[in-house]
Image (cartoon, rainbow, N blue to C red; front, side, top):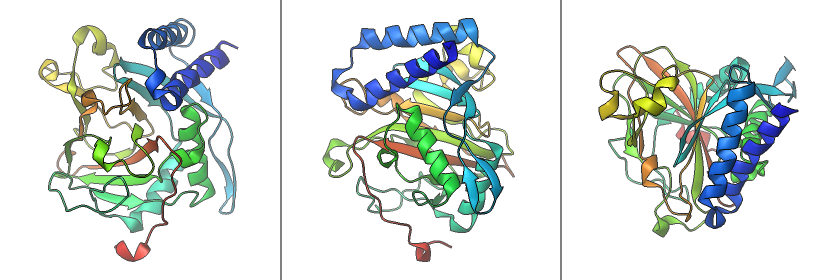
Length: 297
């Protein structure tokens, strides 16, 4: 019963942000977060929370979604950053990588309407676009991302994007939210998940530039954060741990882009490889055109 209460409260926190961006009361939100943290710490600090969607496979054409277990940790309250252990299963990861491998091409910078902008040297990774509901596995994953945010309709979630980094490739500091002048269709990107699919390297962290490492707050997260002599002078640096996900809100209580969400995808070490999954949620349900495979190589 306590697990159900905790999961429900987490859904309330997320849905408040998604559906009532301009009506959020900071104190109420903090009370909910603190209560959730108390329950997690008191009752299942070393246990896993449960979600309604995952995958079981019997053959290539039959798939069923069933309960998938994961654990959440609140890393920051302003902006809200939640770390999710074991958000994707090993089979789901394998499936996404197999889908993406023949589709990788040079990563692009697009505007709010999906129109390609001029190439930017600060994004040198490769990206593979996965269509909505491309396979039953993908559909299960899409529903999990939506359900984590208070049972949103999956069409609020953009189609999944798999991204690959080799040595020397990076995504320099950037925001996921759009400038107001670019908001024409689909609304703002209100939240981001970055999920690690594969990493055979050291380095390759996801760094939040403007959120400074605080020893008193963050040392307990050194299994997922990089903690070294440089940490007090740098932002929060998340280690690439396959299957785990970082979730954060891109906008503040007034619905404006949050400067503290400035982040970067750092390069893996020499001979290293990092593969991740970008998942963004819009303020409105949005329809995206299907992938044009003629542009992939």
